[in-house]
Length: 473
Image (cartoon, rainbow, N blue to C red; front, side, top):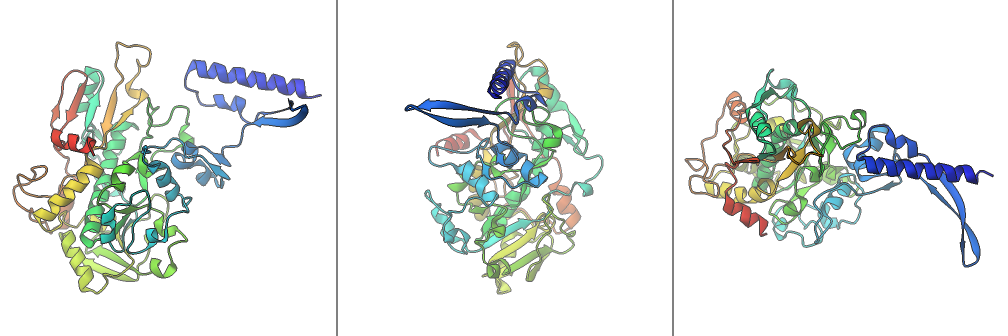
């Protein structure tokens, strides 16, 4: 009879789990003691006996939200799960589970969108699709590698806090963080590196959204990278506590809701689709192949993205010059007679050589209002790492040290007195030399820090009245 041995194994495992819970976050390897456990017995019910079993499912086939959507363990190890939990996600509200749906869409597991979601003209889906989406026709796809760090100078020195909106904690931590400069190539893993490198990909998302707006097309997002996990407590060198470095290499392919607030996008004039949109079987081949590739003269060849996907070859090529703005790109597409194409594709190396303007101060100001909602003040996410908190938790005299993101990209020029009061002319003149364009783009932004005591804010583009408008919507 093996039942006593199984009972003893279960008791030992439950005691082990209780001890681990009492001791705090699990350390690497500790959960191995309770994996693979099986326990079988019989229970009485209405005078009859029924067999039951308790066991732990293998995470390769029964995936938690973190192992599947954040770590991509199953994908990287060649497993196809039979069940996936939508846990460890963000952005759900009382109105709708925005974060869950976004993640399932990205992995092609959300199968209930209406046909209109995939059509040139049509709303996204319930609940309450943004009515302005009906004004858009077709799609703009930002593809290829977003960051090409191999082409960046070495060393590439930046203030570690240049992409943070707030630094909080002990005064010594705040002062040291604001004063520290590092080479982005060798900066240690953690919140500062994550926010800094994300600022480059965030600006590309911003610019692609502006180009899509000029063309009145819905933006197909690129796959995103994160250089730190997102967690509501202290991270361990950028990772969830208990996750080994080999189980989640940095950077990692991260879901949209790790970096953006899905609900704000859903209710703004900024229609988007997930990065895997064109991989869906719901997109017809004739539509997928009805494409135009936008290239800027002199731009380097586009490299494959971090998922290993090569930029798709388009049926037609639209060639522009460095410094052409988004309005000119939209006009050139129409002049070629290609305005009805299902998808226009553009890579990051070409996109960053276009002039960041919609062609008029009025158009720029209207876009800035949208961006302030989807990329602005709402993106207040706290990152706390154990490397910055050697004396926490357990000592109330030492506050937890954290860095907050994200800064919105630079607003489009709209003249003085506009939404953010940026720029002296409307709009600013566009540079036409590729080297000058990139030098200005990669220049370190100026930050003005304000605050006292346990926090300092970089409030340059975050006026208080906009914050109240945002929170009240």
